[in-house]
Image 1 (cartoon, one colour):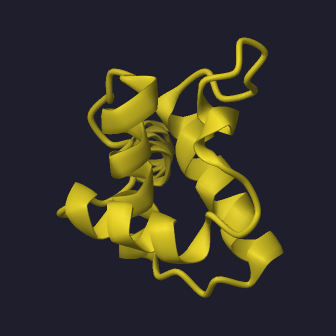
Image 2 (cartoon, helix red, strand yellow):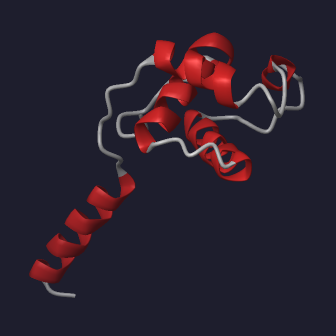
Length: 100
């Protein structure tokens, strides 16, 4: 691979691995969670010892999964708002630059 191809590959790889910074709103996330998530489960799912969420990225992906399953029609900002609310309230994951 020549130097130009290596540079382009590295540039594309780094841009694909990071997500754009979104302004998250935990209060909006709390409201959305209350309105759209409580019909499927209560908050105990977030404190159970055998939970399946282990990172902030897992949390965001799970909110996306639940959004699809419930057909809640959350926007990308809404998904991050709900994730921020859940993280602040239950999970307390450290967020790495680029993952919300």
